[in-house]
Amino acid sequence: MPDMSRTAAAVWSDPDFATAWLDADPQGEHDLLALPRLIAARVVAEVTPRPQLVVDVAGGSGKFLGVMLDAFPGARGVWLDASETMLDRARIDLARFGPRVTFTVGDMTELRASGVPGGADVVVTSRASHHLDRAELHGFYREATGLLAGGGWMVNLDHIGPADVWDKRYRSVRRSFGAYRPSAPSHHHNYPLPSAEDHLDGYRAAGVEDLDIAWKAFYTCLFMGRAPQG
Ligand SMILES: C[S@@+](CC[C@H](N)C(=O)[O-])C[C@H]1O[C@@H](n2cnc3c(N)ncnc32)[C@H](O)[C@@H]1O
Image (cartoon, rainbow, N blue to C red; front, top):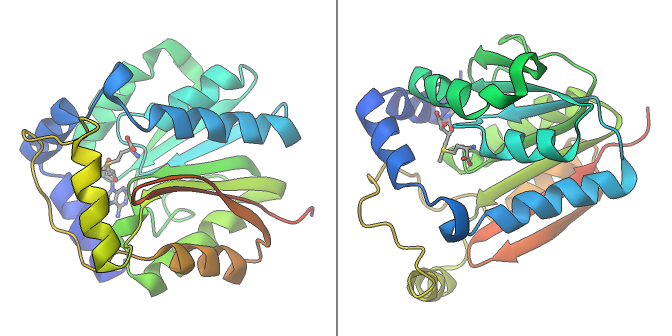
């Protein structure tokens, strides 16, 4: 397991930290990421109206997987995360989907070894890959896109590292939108975070050329790419 991935997994495996983070994560109308999750589902639906299998990597409480399974009632989901605390929360928050969801505790850089099945129509991940450095990120994209069926979707909603001057502007303006979470526990990040170019290069290196940044606000991007047909 790569070093930065191991460090991140260890932090999130601390139940006190994970619980405090979950409790501070904005919900409902305060959740600025509700829109890009929905955009992702609708862009997928435009091309792939009936996906059968959706994998959520580092799924946390299951917010992204929940949006996908609501949008696609015929799909089943695989949730993977390194944290047992997140597992407990995801089992509660995704309970309404019953046997449609399979839960797997494992590392995002060892998807196959963790038992994630291939043939996925959609792989989503959010707010997790920024813990990886460029080489690890590219390894992640390589393995995750390798799990896709032909024409499947690789979707990543994550924070990126903009140039310093833009980072300062974005952080300041974002606060004015009520996105500042004083009670959120801080956790270690390796700066600079991967840039938007690091992500786009990672998609391309994994063989995904049909891609775009489908949404961007401040330093958070929704990357969407479609694997070539088999
Ligand atoms: C900021 S939370 C985001 C959770 C969820 N994806 C969301 O957006 O609501 C980061 C998640 O990544 C998970 N995580 C961090 N490093 C990981 C790793 N190496 N393998 C698997 N999961 C990891 C954490 O346990 C945590 O659930």
